Image (cartoon, rainbow, N blue to C red; front, side, top):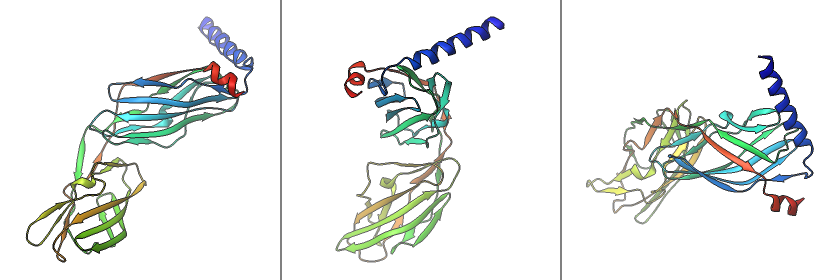
Length: 259
């Protein structure tokens, strides 16, 4: 037990002494890409100074399910041990990309190499639809659909074009998702029209997050049109998947050039 404690103390002291001998004020890390079964992680702009370590992480979701990264469960290795980030959750909709800077702050953090341990990677395997009744137009000013709150942000009709926008906020404790392409417009004669706006996007929400979402339809009918939500709203509980470790190393050329 004493040998283990002594070895840990020796390693920690060596790490600190090494950090103090780095002659550059700012250490720039190499850009790199790491693949996992669920996503690709592109790391750019990584730097280390006395008071922080940070890097921009661009995540490409390979799956047909929403991915979630909880930065409070992501760590950089530092002379002071593994430090977690305090950034907001990163939610990556199916087949889409999101980018965010993940950083940690403290004292004596300058290093020539660090490991970003993404231990907070989750996937939304099970999706529960949230049903909503059809909505006759003109649109309601405010709607509550399960844990989703909608506030009208714009409404217009120009010839055959019917345009509307809603600010959608999720207030639940799971992961909320909204697929605009599922929302259709039906005319009195039974004709159904697809949403021509945001048709390739899925919006993913954490608690109290909101987005403004547009809808556009072409309808010959000038009245009695009805909007059908068609299970466009869903919720999911994220499930943890295998960790991803990203090894950050000094880019000596860039570091020399910029110091």
